[in-house]
Amino acid sequence: MEAVTAEVLAARLAALERRLRLSTFVWLGIVIVLTVVSFGAQRALSQTSALHARSLDIVDASGRTRISLGLNTNGAPGIWVYDAHSKSRVYVGLSAQAAPAIELEDKSEKIRVYLGFGAGEGSAPELSLTDPRGDQRLYVGWSTTEKPLFSVYGADGKTLWSSP
Image (cartoon, rainbow, N blue to C red; front, side):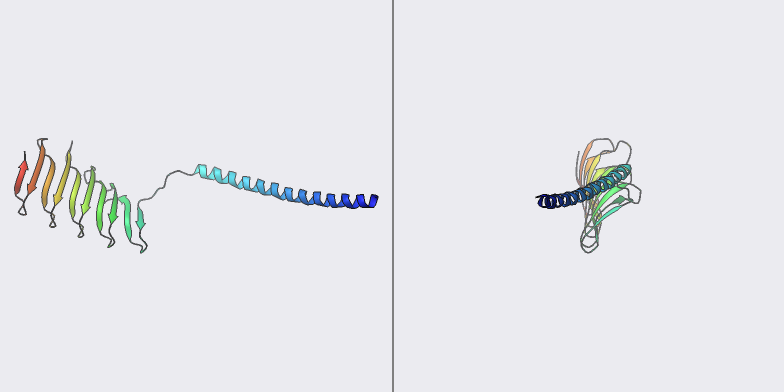
């Protein structure tokens, strides 16, 4: 009976040794993973939470820029949207006078619609529509005397109708 008990005990001891080796490897793996995660978390916390760049371009499958976030020639921030032919069609940003502006451009990249603020101190909002030549045809905004103004212009640039 002792031989059977010794074989059973040997088998149980071998199984216990396998479990001990396995649990040692598992604990060693957990310690390594926790160490790596701890160092990674410390490094991530030491990094800034902002993306810094001079510009950001979003391109299509052909590599053409379709949206660009950056600075205009005056150093003011803006967003440009381009068509499939890489022509600027929409601009949202600051004007040359650092006032908010939205510009819609035609296929030849001429500004056809401008919504923003006029030049000068205390400038007021304005909407301007132009023809294909770039001549202003409609203006809604404020006059130099700070009164509302709505004007329609002819092809020759003369006022066709204005209020007040």
